[in-house]
Each structure stands twice: as structure tokens, then as C-alpha cells.
Length: 205
Length: 133
Image (cartoon, rainbow over all chains, first blue to last red; front, top):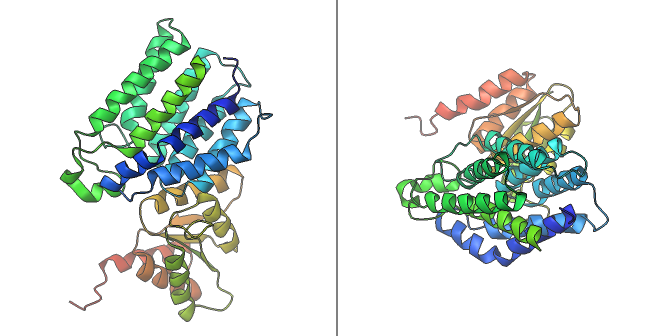
């Protein structure tokens, strides 16, 4: 992976900004109608704080995490912020060793689960993130490439988003809706899937 | 004295709750608002909350009142940020209604209660009937 971590963060920002209205619309259906606006504000702030000269993986992930925490404004701030901070903790200099990537993914997932006190099946980001992580590790463990792992992870995340349409929200604002939340896809699971898509696209560039 | 921090998505709410608490509180008592985002839009900001907690602490700990959802998540994140920067501050989040709880908690702090008794007084409000039913 020769591309800089900055280019990945920028790709994430771009996909979030492109889908800002879509994410807010999803959130309007079952939440407080701010997910797209919040995520776009957060990622814009993060990109502003970074520059192309920022090459240190750990440092960039940390800056991104703190930037999201202080500028997103909704629950996604602490959740996505924790994701980046936890991944930064286990990142090893600028090594993009597939096994290190697996560990970063795992640390990020565990961090989000702990922060949100959430498990799979509660119509949250975890419904996309956990299957994505499992698919990613499975490919790497069986000797596949990072690209193949990202492709499988994205596929699993998309299935996870579809799955969120079938279940009742028990976390966050959507939980106030009870059964009326069925039929709507979770905005957080959707934004995570978009981020994963931007990572894969940037990787393949 | 135990410090109080009010966290709401709305800056108007947190400022208003602070004003209401101040009516009955001591002049030097630290009751700090950490609501909304810097541009006054609705939301919660863990870094802002962490700063408020730090400013509210005078050594006896801080009791935080938060409205809902991300206010709780952001407060928990703020506590972790303080821990990670090795700031040794005792912090509790009250499981109580934000207005009534904050008033009960800040009065208990004013009359010399410790963090535990402030937390208890604040959380007792949950079963308090305002219609005397």
C-alpha cells in the first residue's frame, strides 16, 4: 500500500460529503436527521487539520479520531472517534502488514462495541462492522490479498446494512420508534459501509 | 466542593439549567455548562465536556448531568480523554432527569455533600412526584 494514510482519510471525507444528504435522509426516517451533516462536518474538520505531509499512520489516525470526537456532534463522534483512536493504538509505524491491519480492525471494532455498549442485532454500525471484520480476517487468514479482504469485507458490510432493515432498533434515538424502525436501514451501518467502500476504491486507484 | 457539569445537545438548555442551579447555589460553586457545539448548533462535544469537567473540579470530584443519547456517549468519551491524559479527577454521571437532578445535586454540593451523596440526591429525583400524587 504505497498511498498515504492522508489519501485514505480524504477519500473517506469525499464519499461522506457525496452522500451527506442520503445519510441525513436515512437518519430523518428513524433518528434526529443529522447523521449526514454531522459526519460531513466531522470529516471536513479532520481533513482541514491534516496535510499531505502528515505521513505517520499512528499520528494521522489519532488526529482523525480526536478531530471526529470534537466536531461530529452526535453519537457518531465518540463512536467513529474511538474507532480511529483504537486502530491508532495498535498501528505499527507505517507497516501495512495484513496481520497488523487485522489487529487494527479488531481493536477498532472492540472499541466501538465497548463505547456504544452494543452487540450485533441492535440495528447499529456493529451490524455492518462486525461481519466486515470477520470477512476481512477470513480472507487474510486463508492467504488472500488485502484487496480481496477489502472486497469481501465490503460485501459483508452491505449485507449487514440490508440486515438492519429487518430488525428493531434498541439503541439510540431510533429505539424510541420500536417496531416502526423496521424497514429502515441504519444510518451508522450505512456510513461505515461507505467508508469501507472509499478505502477499497482508494486502495485500487 | 463537588463540581457540576451540565451536558445537553442544546446550549440553551445547558445554560438554562446552570442558571436555575445558580439561583440556589453558592457564589463560588462551580456549575459549568457544556452544551451544543461551538457554532451553537445542536450536538455534544466530548472535548468541550472534558474541559468543563477539568474546570469544575476543585479536588472533590465532578457530577455530570446529561440529556440523552450522544450526551451520555460524549460524556463517557470525555472521562476517557481525561484518564488518557492522566488527569486524576473523580467523575460520576448522574442517572437522573437533567433539570431536577442538577438542582438537587448542586444543592447537595452547596451544603457540603461529597460526590457520593450528590449522586444519591440527584438520582432520588427519579422517584420524586412533582404532582404530590
